Image (tube, rainbow, N blue to C red; front, side, top):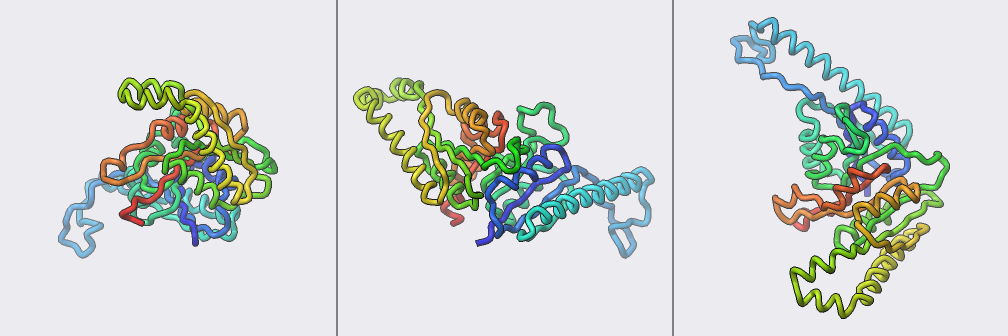
Amino acid sequence: MKMRVLIAYDGSEGAEAALADQQRAGLGNNVEALILSVAELWLPPPPPSSGVDESFPLYTPPGLKSAREHVAEAIEQVRSLAKDAGARVQETFPSWKVGTEVYTGSPAWEVINKSDKWEPNLVVVGSQGRSALGRLFLGSVSQKILTEARCSVRVGRRPTAPDRAPVRVLVGVDGSPGAEAAVQAVAKREWPFGTEVSVIAVEDPTVPTVLGNLIPRVAKWIGESEEGDHQWVRKMVEASAEDLRGAGLDVSPVVKEGDAKKVLVDEAKRLGADCIFVGSTGFSNRLERFLLGSVSAAVANRAECSVEVVRNKPASEV
């Protein structure tokens, strides 16, 4: 089955990094990629005229005419950017079917709208666009797409490893359906030989305390079976690792203690990971579209490597 990938591109350093990251994303050869560029421009529609062509009224104020000419020129520049990016992606991945589209309006909304209509398996964004202020903060456009897209979103950052170095992937698991989706996403990719995968579960020592304060019965159960809890985590990590080994990957299961937001980012840096895969919340109703797990959001913002937030389609759409 062909994989559909929607790549948001604006010519920025972040967008270029996202393009470079595709070479280590395990996407395989059977891919249909669409490069989407957006000219962030707004212009009122032309007023009705008595002429035949309503796109060119009989009288256009000089200022408005100049603005329209500027818009047309800007759109052509964006179109040229998209065409160039598409040509480079096609050269890098000759077997892919690559197309380009250009829109005007809000970049985030146009990407989300196209994603809703085209229904890609994955949306790719750079960590920052042209207006980004700091490397460690996710750009507002990327943040909005990450939060509101219905499919998986990959925040691409430029690979730091040499081209011939093995691809290194970190998968965060917690036993949730979202984490299982992340494991399955990695298992289904076409990774190069020698790819190394670390499956990491993070035990947060503060969670039992919080649960105990809220639910006394749970506190009693936790106190009686703390060791059993640790065993369950280890078994859960090993089960995820086995799934990935079944896909022919070299996998290391790891259990750490601490805050998952920090541990996943720190481990990715220590291991020299190319990407962190994490699950997200599902979409069982309209409100849930605007919810992103706090761990997923924090990791996407703070990591120095690429981060892929994996979403399954809602049951109503399957």
